[in-house]
Length: 94
Picture 1 (cartoon, rainbow, N blue to C red):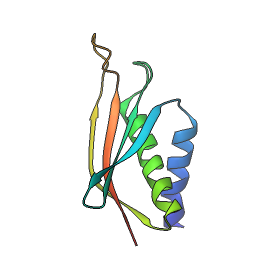
Picture 2: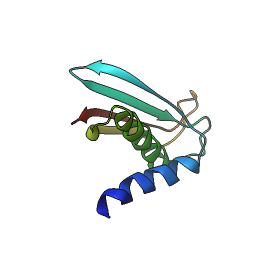
Picture 3: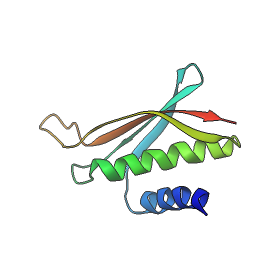
């Protein structure tokens, strides 16, 4: 039961917001996913949940488990169009 809660929470969080995200390899079998709000209205917690969902789905496609290495983010928008964002570094492990 406990193993089903995280995927469900991440899935539901991802359905609630429109964000821009992409996954890039960064070396040593690690990947980076950045989830950024298209406006200043989405909070970092929602963006972090979206990034985790993207990472989880990426690892599931490879039939592996998600292992988060690091989480980073910016909480607020500023005048230079640096909208809220979350960045997660992760690995897919057997």
